[in-house]
Length: 124
Image (cartoon, rainbow, N blue to C red; front, side, top):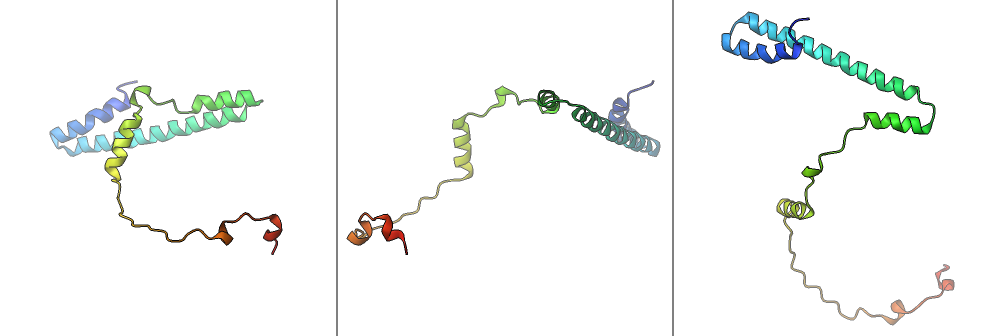
């Protein structure tokens, strides 16, 4: 079978940089093109596999079991950020703005507006 494509792709840029030869550059570009083509092919196969599996389900339980197979895995629990750390970060990003307000309300109580009403008064 030969050397795996990923190994060839990993080695050829360093070889090309080291030797500065046009042949090494062409080999790298050829391997890169082959690698991209292989990735597209594998992606298409994966998408076809998903479509086939979902198309063959017979009930809700089987459907959700199939969907869970393709669902991304949960994140590492050790990387969860604490609430205190989030608060510090957000306060650093969005510093609070203190506006000085002088709000004095004079004579805000009006008997006519503050009195109870009956539903009959709501009809216009």
